[in-house]
Image 1 (cartoon, rainbow, N blue to C red):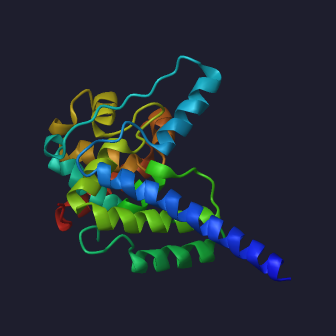
Image 2 (tube, rainbow, N blue to C red; image 1 turned 180 degrees about the horizontal axis):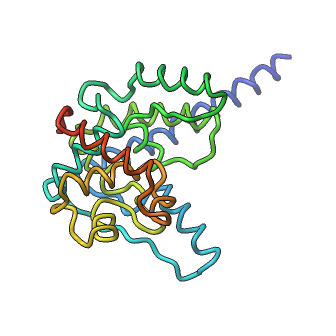
Length: 231
């Protein structure tokens, strides 16, 4: 019996040690990204794998641009659309999560998120798209790491450079050139609001173009842009 207990304790210890090493490796990468830019993300790698199932030579378009070279209008549009309390919270908008939960409960399906920019960045950088309790827990832990290690300005810079904005386009520079033929620095308020409105389903809107819903969302975001603060 004692031998069995020791065996169980060793298993528990080994699991905890492996977990600590894994989480430590994630935090080490986040610390590295304080001054270095990620080459890609888990989401980008998964998307590229999907594309290469049909075309082995498929590539993604992503061009890194420093924070100062991204239009202030786009920064405001993204914060207005995705996380109006970005500067006020420490990774989680609890009120937004509660509102999303209640809305989903009324509809009987997932129709609203509640994820902050930091949570979305955590997911894009490290996690799969599978909806599992483990993934949500890991997303929360990585969000805490991001907020602890990085300034808000850097979190938003990473987000703007790495999120999906089309079939093969990732980041603000690729999106600006793909949809408007200009660089991320030159986006005006209307263009920025439209790109922000595309974020929840970029591939769909890239294929369909401007839909009535997208037009309404663009107008709502543009109206809110003056009400938010950005780093």
